[in-house]
Length: 181
Image (tube, rainbow, N blue to C red; front, side, top):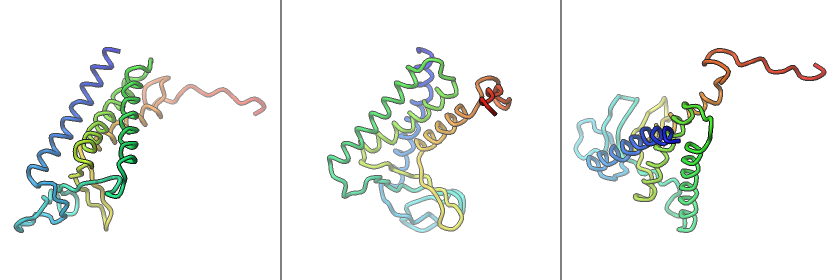
């Protein structure tokens, strides 16, 4: 358990710190302005174009719940988010025989989720600031915390699909034959 706790701390805490630090840098540089104008040499723009047609940096508050959501609903949703985070920590530390890949995946997920929960508690919303621009109108806005969540889920899926009978890429043991088949 001690080894899992150290692994959880070594993965989740840096993700949480990186998420909050990058958001602080973006807010310091741009403020919380939800404008979508990108820097192309113009005065007073609210973003930086990193790669033409691919990636930009600009702060956009993601309220998740909207301004019309009441206090009780917000409290219930924040409380359930906190309970889910506590459950994930409990699962990571308490489940015996969990593969190390699953511990790493859960730890990354916990770090990213903690960053987003901290935003909701402090700012009232998650501050998205990385914007991927897909073809046409497709695209996505995200944070370092979201990258931690996505990475954690990907590692958990690999662990779920992976055979524990042998190394990745080798087939699992042959399942028993069904009766009468």
